[in-house]
Image (cartoon, rainbow, N blue to C red; front, side, top):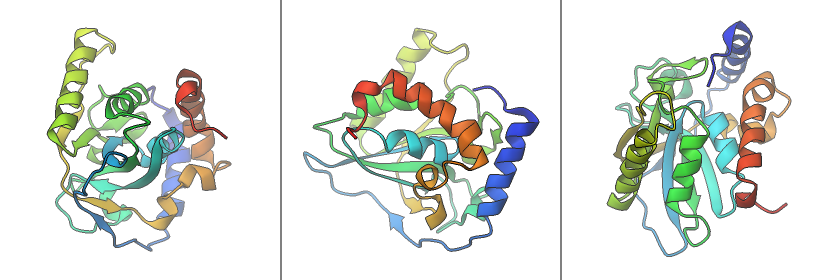
Length: 215
């Protein structure tokens, strides 16, 4: 992903500072949950969670996507704390999906194909450990799938640089503040959505049109 430059940074600052005024936090923690034949979970960090949520929410077989924080050491962090980069948390999405409709490998493929997994602690103009590329695996099968895909992508030289995606065990997911949930759906005319999310969605929708929810 190319750096957005001054205009992109301006959109980002407007988006983040405006929303930071709302300090209402959902004090909800999600720990490891039981899976069934039709319910499983995936947790990904791929930069700003507004972008990642907008993509995965459109997939057939995805039941729910929540934006939040994972991978850090601070309990119940707020957005204002996470964006300092001092909590250790990444902005992530927590996906509930039906594995009989969409499998984890497909989710992984989309994850790696819709962000840049080779830039350490950065996605475009978004910089800091909170924007790191990460897979928080829920079981050994997910861990092996993530590591195998990284190995295969690196071997095939799909990207110019080596993948730096963190692959680590899921511990706890903290649901982000209400205004972060369904952010794109609720703010389509906002500057960041127009400049950053729309182009990513258009590319994704063309490439994975057979995976999209029926309207």
